[in-house]
Image (cartoon, rainbow, N blue to C red; front, side, top):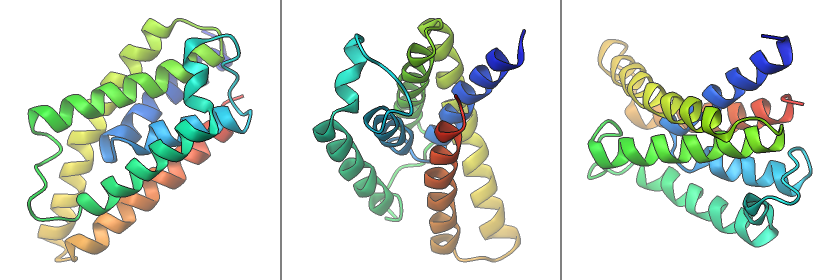
Length: 161
């Protein structure tokens, strides 16, 4: 496997891990990456997700998720429905990355979906342990997790190609 393909595979898995932290953030990030021309989906049905309207709408939904995540009534990310959503958005985000590279979207879907599941469980464990063992406020850890998801997502897609 050449280094470009390894970077692509790590990127697909990585964007999935970010979906495990915040389900809509990677989709918003990838939509903006398409909109700004960092990823090229010209001629693809997925190109619509790079339109200004789509990027703005997905970003607003992602911002709403950042608020809802902090509410005490929000279900655990490892519950079946939230976990499935994270696997789905991780897969879709990775599909967009793989389509931009003219590579197998099936591989992107698998890597992104798997990353979403891994990120959900890893993110939950890290946040839970930091709050329990270090006695850090959950809200502060959640804000740090938001920053990691947003910053990590943009860092990842801006350095893929």
